[in-house]
Image 1: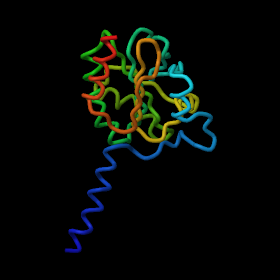
Image 2 (image 1 turned 120 degrees about the horizontal axis):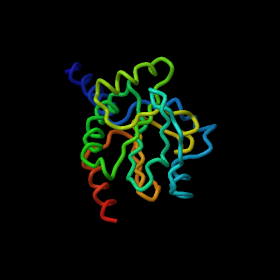
Image 3 (image 1 turned 90 degrees about the horizontal axis):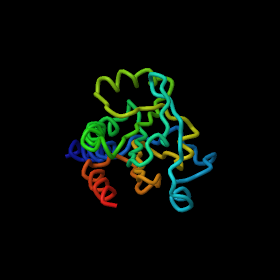
Length: 180
């Protein structure tokens, strides 16, 4: 009986780990100039950024004007991030003319070297860039990963998700935005 009672908290803890990884160490609420509520209420414009890919190219959000953009903050060591990547790959493939996914890696010094092999091993077909404090702050702080922002063709943030997002949630919103 005692063994059965001990299993329940473990199952509950494991189920939460599939929702969102631990808090991001990029976010320090005491020093954070923005929070997501301020960002979404004050200006719905997505902050432009200029970030490097693992091969040294620069990716800017402004390069994707007139496209729907899914900005996905993630890391190689995050199980829910890993679980969601195949859906993002499928979305990028299915909606390649209208949508771009941009993965913003929040890997740090001890795992940053894992990003390029990770991209290759997973067959990621969308741009992946290295995040920094500036972009994290510009998006209101990233409390946990994965965190995603959906940006419409006009550059407005129209939806935000913390944790693993079902593919259907993304595709439903994409279809709705494409009708506008």
